[in-house]
Amino acid sequence: MLDGDTVVFVEVRYRRHAAWGGALESVDARKRQRLILAAELFLQRESRWGRSPCRFDVVALAPGQEPNWLRNAFES
Image 1 (cartoon, rainbow, N blue to C red):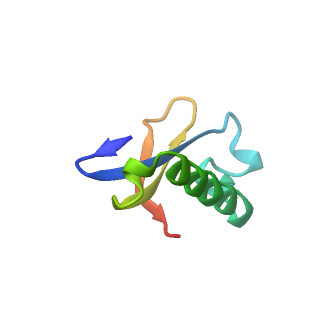
Image 2: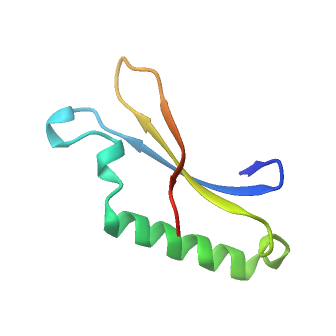
């Protein structure tokens, strides 16, 4: 997604039951590394975005709750 001139990579996570941890907590170190790799591959293939600033956002969803959009959730 674009936010002005910033390329934003958005991970959307849904958790039906909090017993397995919340949606935000599900974006662990392994998942962050996979998202970073996917972003790197995208930027290599779409060179027009290669010099644009980038950020990683996470949108957490749970039944009966408003979406929680965490902007700049982590850095690479």
